[in-house]
Image (cartoon, rainbow, N blue to C red):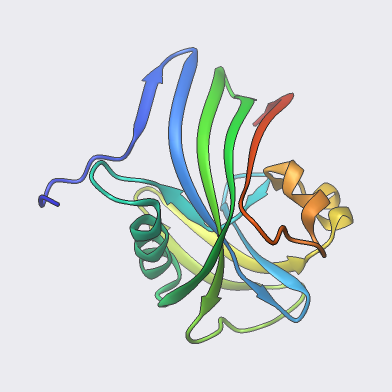
Length: 169
């Protein structure tokens, strides 16, 4: 890999394509989630892959950058082709979702921000949410389809094609 970094993102407004890798980190029946300080929704920690980087390298790098922790990949849970609307875009996201273990856990509180980081111009907040379908709906955790898998993650990798359809902001 060269010193120059290029995130995999094609912006052809109103179309957007991105390659995102995210991790599921559980603690006390809760799931670690993140959001931009100005966002109204939560997402799984992770980020865009870079050209020349495997999805495994991406999730390890992103966790080091975002939560300053080393993670161990337990297994790949999902590959996805996710379609959704976002602001003025119709987005197409290729996603890889890994089950992760963390070397040193973040503090655990059920209703507080447990970590903050500045990522470019954005402050990113992290907290623990109940690992339930109801929490995915109540707290607008995205992608929404993952809520139906809480409590029973697949034993083998599943490839999903999901069209969330509704506009997202």
